Image 1 (spheres, rainbow, N blue to C red):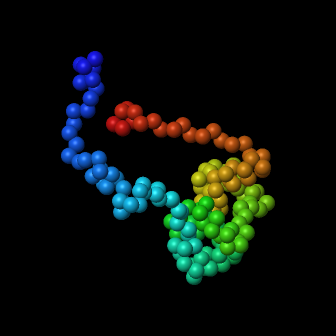
Image 2 (cartoon, rainbow, N blue to C red; image 1 turned 90 degrees about the horizontal axis):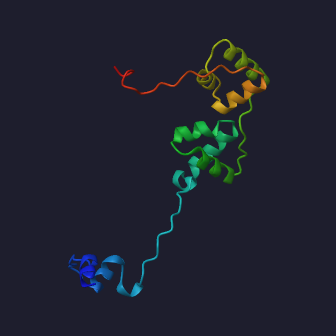
Length: 155
């Protein structure tokens, strides 16, 4: 048994006493006891931007500018911006594809335009274009095969 204890014991020497280790582990005074874990608080956009910028964003959103374009411009998550705008009383709705746009989307897709081209032309998301084409009864083309990174293609 003594050999087993020798194998399992920690042979490292610690240069600190137990009291010194406690002082290192707990910041602040000794009397405070264990440290309180820091609670994560997300940075609110309204505080980060300030009242003037928030009011500008509210006005832009109310005039119809998309939350996605505003979020892209500000380099923030669109979900965070949506939350902030809703807290400010802005009603956020998804952009609806009009009947005329749906007809044009279908015609252009059938003439050979790609999904990505239609998304850019109409400033719509991939899902909005896809739903519009499905509602119009368009038969979707087969997607192009994906490129694989093999040694034969990199030569």
